[in-house]
Every structure is written in C-alpha cells, then in structure tokens.
Length: 274
Image (cartoon, rainbow, N blue to C red):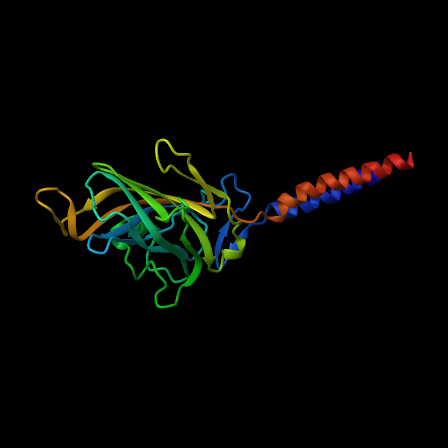
C-alpha cells in the first residue's frame, strides 16, 4: 500500500506542475485545456466588398482568446482577410450569397499602435496597423478557405443579407504561421445543404468562423434603378467575428491519463505481493 500511495503522490505532484502551464507562441498565451479550445473573438472588424470585382476583404483586432482578454502581454493580435470571391454576379439587397477562395492571416505586433480602448472602435483600425507592417509583425497563423460543398462551386463562405444585419459562416484550414504546429487539423464539422431534396454534404475543417455586421455604408455603391441591384462601387461594413479550432492539449491532460496507469500498475503489483 505504501508503494501505491507513494506512486500516487508523485503523479499528483507531476499533475499539479503541469496544470498551471499554458501554451505561449511569440507572446500569445492561451489555455489549450479550455472547455471550448481554441476560440477567439473580435468586436471590431472592418469589411469592404468590391461590387465591380466581387471580392470581399477587410481587417480586425482580436479581443479575446479562450475567453481571456489578457492573452498578449505587451503585444496585440490582429488579422487581415481577403480574396473571397462572389460566385453569383448579382448583389441583392436581401438574400443569400456564396463565396469561394479566401484566406485569413493573424499577426502578432510587439509594438502596438493602439490601446485596448482604441481598438474597440473600428475607425481606429487601418490596413496598416492590423497587418504585417512590411514584415515587422510576425505571421502568427495563416488560414485558407475550406471548401464546404465539395462540388464544382467550391463554396468556402456563405453570407446571409438581411434588411439590417448580415451574417456569415465559413471554414478555414491552417497553411502556415508560428502557431500552425499547435493546431489540430480537421476538428470542425461543416454542413452544407445543396437543396431541399438532397442530403447535406459534411466535411471537416481546421477552423470554423462566423461574422455579424450591422453598420453599413453604401454611399459609394451604384444601384440599378429598375432592379435595385448593386452594379459597381465599394460597400463597407463594421461588425464582429468569432473563430474556433482545436489546439494540442498540454501535458496536464496526458498526466491525468498517466495517473490512472500508475495507480493501476502499482495496485496490481501490490496484489501480487500479497
């Protein structure tokens, strides 16, 4: 029994030493054992939609990571997204839009230009202070659009345009960045419904994400007078973004498993000696 108790004590000490640890990549720290790991959010993103080219792009500032706001001490995590191409040539005022392609790049900036309070206002964000700044900021995570439908259209992002709010959902796959090796692939289920009488298409991406916009500016857009369809110009929007993936667990999760094995092994040995 003394052997078993000693083994358990050692395992508990190891577990305690692991449980306080966290993953840190270039100043960005998070708990990989979080119940909803790996999740993040932004309440200030800026988006542009080029009506002429059908390209969606924008940038933003990450405010939370695994529900923590102090995940980047002395630094900030920002992102750019772009190259989302509209599949349908018509831009309705209200309706469903499908996009293909797309990518998101997250950058860690150790000389931030914005305070946290300033980052809450989209007007303080620019393409410059949220990007690489000519290579000065490290590419923390690089993600490409994940094909949701598995068909010829290669849909990676779906937007639903309401009268006052636009929401979107999409999938992403890790292709590079400092934190790439910490992410577990193919953990997020994507469901695409090709039609009422057709079975849904299921696929797995590394990340899922969603966006919501409620502040719009269409002053730079030209609309067809008869149909009301946008035909040229750039529409802008402001809103928020959430993203979700899965990172590699810390040794604490493995230690729990090891604790059980140690107890069983020494328990069996103790029985043999009796």
